[in-house]
Image 1 (cartoon, rainbow, N blue to C red):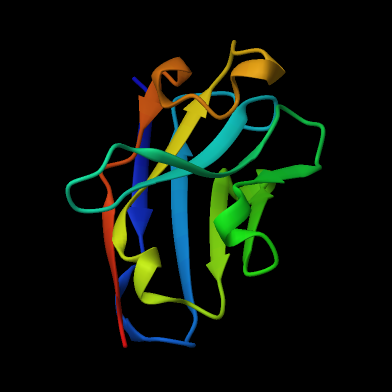
Image 2 (image 1 turned 90 degrees about the horizontal axis):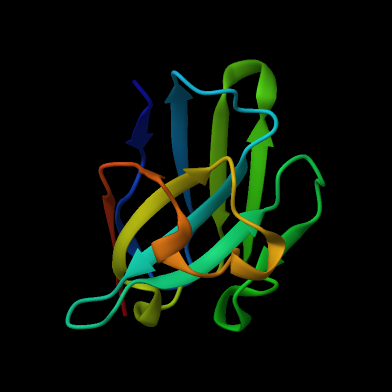
Length: 126
């Protein structure tokens, strides 16, 4: 079975940094599309960042451009989200996601992803 296990998260002051990690098992990782989504309290799950299959170039949601960096380490089957210059509006439950079949035009749609991590809370205080 496919499992995505997250680590990281926590409480951080505005302007600080945090790094999230997600380790996958039971799946061919290097050819999969990987992504991060977040769900603020009372809101729908929203796209944060993704890397489509093995293309390498990353896509980012406008609110996090220039502040967040998605990366992958295929040797360790791990994806990461480096979050810098954090703002209170970044507060959310963060989820890693993985899919082996979606097309590029669907990369920002959470309903297209088959596999999800358990979620990690990120809280940014002002």
